[in-house]
Image (cartoon, rainbow, N blue to C red; front, side, top):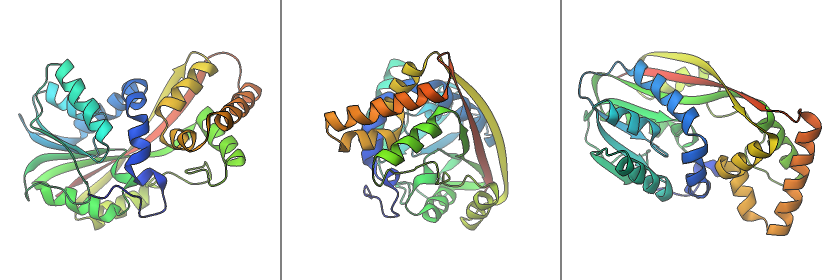
Length: 273
């Protein structure tokens, strides 16, 4: 199983996702469920399907699908994410067919095993996205669909956080100068087609989320944003306090003291095997 980044992107390793597993599960639940619901609609699944959720994270899609009657297999390289998914499924009284720690670039499933395949903001960070798409295509039954989501853009204070941190912290990962993987719809369509899919279409959706205060936003971001958590873990407490103070100061100067609005634009790539 590949756990270390091989493409220079720190978010291609399990470490940052283990760090934010608890915060991601709770703080981004509403957002991730919205995107997962749209993905399930686009998949046009048969009744009682067997689906696979690749780089499942906290399993928002897995849980929604299981609740709707699907047989679900889920895989993620973050042990903490898998632990949270198993706990959530138990709390909800849902039984998933198979949940495991593993590599989405080398899936432990048979050819033509699934009626639908999904990856919600997961495959986009694979060191070898081509392998991820090919493996996703391999395990799908002919004529069935895969749905992969990517982040097209983010508008709001999170961009400011990355900009401020990149000025303070050397080698800050995933700064706002770097576009998210597969944020360009043409590139997205081409990579999915190259992975073996036909009739590829890219659907774009925009969602607006509001946080009551800047303090709430910053607390949530430290718990759920992988690049921020990775930097926080690498700095000592004193140095992180300095970074945090500067980020808060900048946010207070840039945004009003009222509620905080973030605009997420997402691509959902749909392809047929």
